[in-house]
Length: 152
Image 1 (tube, one colour):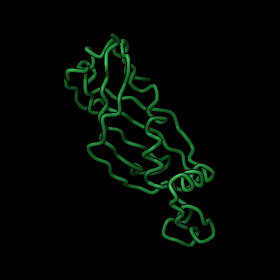
Image 2 (cartoon, rainbow, N blue to C red):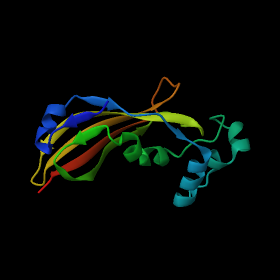
Image 3 (cartoon, one colour):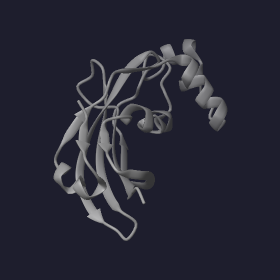
Image 4 (cartoon, rainbow, N blue to C red):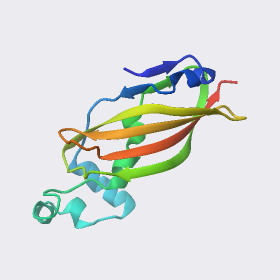
């Protein structure tokens, strides 16, 4: 179930609301593609045999890969009608708490932590936790900021 408000002006009504996304598998092919895109070819990401004997027992996703999936993982979790555009305003804090091994499933839980008016629209502070299927701790927690610009 998503968080839905009629317009950017109604965003303050959503403070404290949260929504949970669907599970998404991070497979080895995606990890390898990210390694190629970022030129980060550490063995913990790509060498299955060596990684099996390493500290995580398998290859792991790059922390930045998991972070980069936030738009995919949070898609549809916050729906704001009357929005002409949403701008990624930045990150206030990110913590990688648990490695994501190849083949793991993750999902996002997003909470509207705060909202502030700006001359362009409304700035929303969002706290997103990326849960790791079967783990007691999340893969990451991020405090992101988005600007919701009303339709003109």
